Amino acid sequence: MNDLLKRRQLEQKMKAEGRLPPGQSATLDFPVLHYGPTPGFSEATWDLRVFGLVDQEMRWTWAEFQKLPTVKITTDIHCVTRWSKFDTEWEGVRFRDFMKLFGVKPEAKFVIAHCEYGYTTNTPLEIMMDDDVMLAYKFDGQFLDQEHGFPVRTLVPKRYFWKSAKWLRGLEFSATDKPGFWENAGYHNEGDPFKEQRMTRRGFF
Image 1: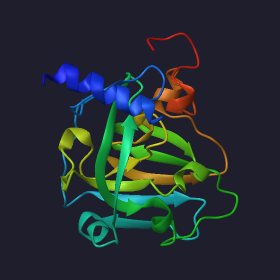
Image 2: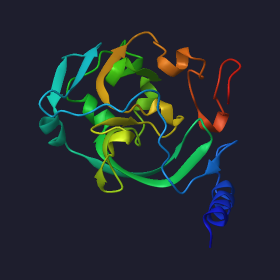
Image 3: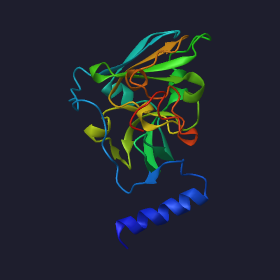
Image 4: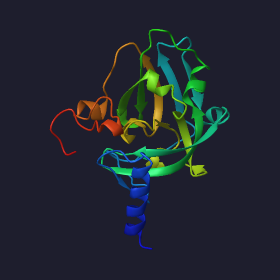
């Protein structure tokens, strides 16, 4: 069976199960899409910081982060460029468990992911509290490839995949929303695939 036929059969199955968002096509690959160069990684200098409306600002080295308890999940992911990949396997630190390490103030309503090269993206805290949201560092049993966000990325499956920020370096907890790189470029602030929230003004999608 060729790949095209496999994809079409998978799309029909996922559509029947209510798992294929409108305007999406199934992929058997894991496309690489990002703006700008792929950053390098230095264990000696890498850290992950939490700040803003937290009870205690904290930092983790790569070695320290890998010692945190992890979970494994299987989930579907959907890119705004119209591909969907099904039953993907991830491992990392569940976000709501991670929050317990430093505490979040009641007035915090949004999480701003800060990444290499100044990239940011924003997500409501209530969405980040879902069971399937994590700080992921393994995919399909292996450490993330560099182009897919190694060492750590956020994973927010219920939003288009640009909200799952690659090359994470910081998490800011904020009372106010702070649209990030793609949101300011015209992408929808929410990005729900099943509502097809792609663009807020005329664009390519």
